[in-house]
Amino acid sequence: MALGGGKEWYFYSQRPSNYKKNSIQYRPAASGHWRVTTMDEPVSNGNTVVGCKKSLVFYTGNAPSGTKTDWIMDEYSLLESTTRTCKKRGSSRT
Image (cartoon, rainbow, N blue to C red; front, side, top):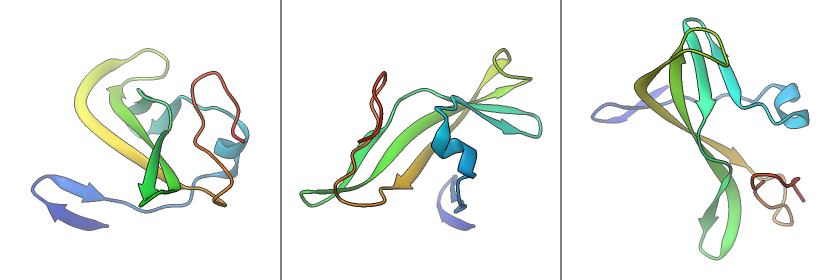
């Protein structure tokens, strides 16, 4: 965990293996859940796509219902190789 300045915090963790198999739109938490609001957006290093970014919003209560809060989170993931692409809504990862 590292403070990035202001009210930004950064956490690093490995994604559970079941996230790779399914298109999970909710991330459970102790007092609610994170809901995906955008599909993967490419993250580049120059002209090379090196990863993907998703935006999530926190909801109190159980998925799929709950009350939306002002908390937002960006989830970044690295691509396994430069031949892979970010997943877009309604398509599979290549």
